[in-house]
Length: 218
Image (cartoon, rainbow, N blue to C red; front, top):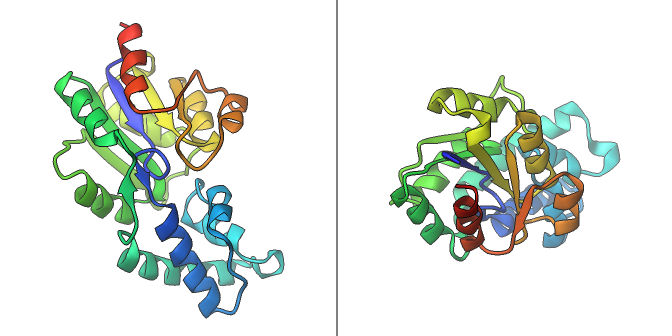
């Protein structure tokens, strides 16, 4: 392997509390029911517009309502995105070790790009990612493989020399759609059964295990 692509939310950063709090505040302000934090583990993963849609009551899921709450959510989230967010244990050491060992590392997230960059700068200031991509207008979201293919092209890497690391079915499907190795993490927002069902080649329980997989593949 030459390139390790990471999902962000639920893989590198535990963002659930800030995402859930921000969404609940918007729902409350607009008069809709709020949700327990654990519900957001199933709401997130397909981009922020889908998060808003899933959080709304079924009869309120019109384009106009979703768009209105989406604008409000982004304003709220960008103010509060770092209240509780933290890297998962062992992630900083993993990233440092990968860089010092000569691997390329990148981020490919369904979180909108304008929110990804400040979070990465805040929580990983000492890590020189080779590429950071969030969801960008006009580009398909994961599990479409576009963001992986874009990364491979920009970094001049073949699919056989890449793995994608993530915590959800969306990430495993993305890896499979791109023809790269799919590595699921059990510490994120979804469970191992979901990762297995969506074709994870490996499932790891702690960041150090990724290094073991990479060594064994040499």
